[in-house]
Amino acid sequence: MAFNKATLSFWQHPATVLLASIFLAVAATASPTHGAQSVNGIAAVVNNDVITYSEVRQIVEPRERLLRSQYSGEELNKKIIELRKSALQDLIDRQLIIQQFSKDKLEIPGFFVDERVKDVIRDSFGGDRNAFIKTMEAQNFSISKFKSLEREKIIVQAMRSKNVKSNLMVPPGKIEEYYKQHREFFSSKAQVKLRMIMIPGKAEAGAQDPQKAMAEEIRGKLITGADFDKMAQMYSEDSTRDLGGDWGWIDDKTLSPQLSEVAFKMKPGEISKVVSLGTNYYLLKVEARQGGDLKPLKDVRADIESRMRQEQAQQLQEHWIASLRSKAYIKTF
Image (cartoon, rainbow, N blue to C red; front, side, top):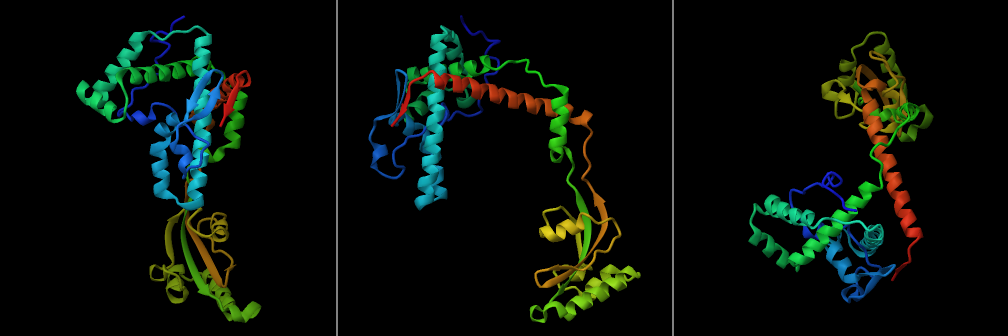
C-alpha cells in the first residue's frame, strides 16, 4: 500500500530550514553538565532499534544553548534534565511510529522525498543547490542522510494523519457545555473608567485613625454632590491627584484584587464606601463601563467545534501512541 499526494496534503513547507529541527527534540539521561554526555553510547532501545547519545546531542544542542543563556547552577541542570527526558520520550514515540509503518507494509514513493529536497532548495536556498549542500556539510549531513531523515519525517506525519479520523463529530450538547464552562474565552475584556481618592492612614492610630474619619467625611460630601475631581485634587495622595484622581479605562488586573473587586461591582456614577487596604483608605467612583459582553453561541459555535475537534484528535493520537508503547520493548539508559 502506498501513500499518495492526497494522503500527504497536510505536509507543510517551512520558510526556513533548520537542520537541527528535522526531528523532535530528543533527550539523554546523562548529566547535563558533566562528561557523560560527551561519550557516545545507547540512550534507549526501542524493540530492535537503538537511539544513541550522538543523536541526542545533535538535536537538543540548540535548545540547550538557549537554556544556558537563561539559567545557571542547579536550576539550569533541572531544566536541561527535564528537556532531555521529555524529548527522549518524543524520539522513542517517533521510532515506534516508523516501526509500525514497516509492520503495516506501507510505502512512501521515492519521488515524494526527491520533491521535498527540491522544495527545500527552492524555498530556503533560492534554488541554489550548492548553497544547500554547503549548509548540510557545515551540519555534517550528506544528501543521502538528509533524504533518509526527510523520509522518516514524512512517515511520522503520514502515520499520525492516518490514525486520526478526518470526520470527527462533536455533539451539539458538548458544544453548548463547552460554551458554558469557558465563558471567559468568548467575552470581551471588561473595563471601567475610574476615579479614585487615596487617603494615607496612620498605622499607630489603630481603629481610631482620624484619617479614616476624614475619608468618611469626604465620602459624605461626594454623595451630596461635591465634584470628585476637585475633592481628589484637595485630599488625594496618589499619583493621579493632579488629574482629579482620574485612572482612565482600567481592566480587572490594573488594581489590587481588593480594589478591583469593588470597582467592577459598581454601577456608573456610584461612589464606593471607604475601602481600607493596608494602612490607607480609598474612595472609588466608576464613571462608565465597557466590554464584558458574552458573544452569542451562534457566533462562536464554529470556533468551539474546531477546538473540540483538535482536542479529540490529540486524545486519539495519545491513545494510539500509548497502544504502540504497550506492545513494545523499551529500555532507557
